[in-house]
Length: 402
Image (cartoon, rainbow, N blue to C red; front, side, top):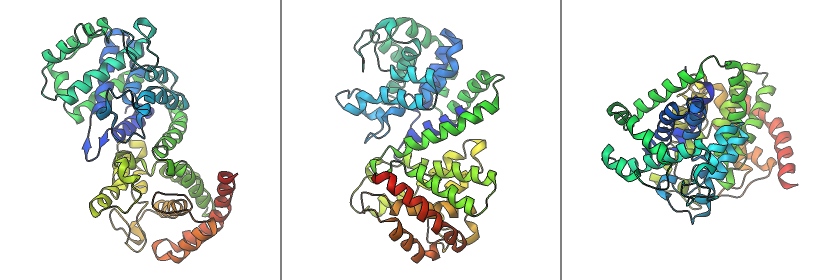
């Protein structure tokens, strides 16, 4: 199995690379190209270059379009700032080496890059590698039928890139690698090969300890894509664990409940931002797209073996006890027990938060709405939830309005 952290980062990169209904390969191709170069130039940096390649555009979350469509638009403040923002986000996950690589990956060898205009050896080697891999993949995206020879011509004598890295990269693009770059499943398998090789004798317990931190930070990043969802996943997790404790769940169930709550909306990363931010009513077609986000959450989390038990929980957080929910219209016992908890806490947080389409309710008013909708929710869980939500909700309310 690949490293725990790498599996999580691969899930997140896959979510970021969903462009509406299309799956881009940008993050994974950038990671693979970076790893190939690392093996040749600096083998001891392969692990951090894999991670940095996967998440090099994490700072672009919140843009109206996928960053690959905005390439070169440095007059856009968010585009200009995305390398630096990405570095900050990775620092919060304690991925210090990766943070430095991402921070400078848009600097150019001739000093014409951004955000600082560094040049030559002022740019960290890892940043030069990811920057080259990033641009190679953008060229592949813009012209999928380009030949290796024509692609190489675009980089020879290009002053923006370290000539030693250009010389090293293209001989590595064998026919086999060239084919892998155009096959999403093959790319994932090739990345896993690198992960297995780099993982060596690492202590899995240490990785699992870091996993909790990475999941927390990723939840914050998911929420920061939209102003109105800031803190949503944390609050849902906070409420859910409180309800779980009131229901006397054991520690393993509470762990699953917490992780599923934090990551329940990861599928929203694959939904166009303009739909989630739309102030007016969605069309029937737009609503169908938005209603797919629990399916995407389930599929993304199922990619990692250690998230297999929370994938169906996250995927069912919009199901309702009477079968009126989505995406599958599950009812009663068909809905996982922990998902029935999250359905209540998620609805409560939505009611008490400002959204583009509605003003927030007070804690007391939101609880009354839930109680009037008890046919939608598990009665036993709802009864246990009310005092918890009243207490914790008012605690959050006081904090947010202080």
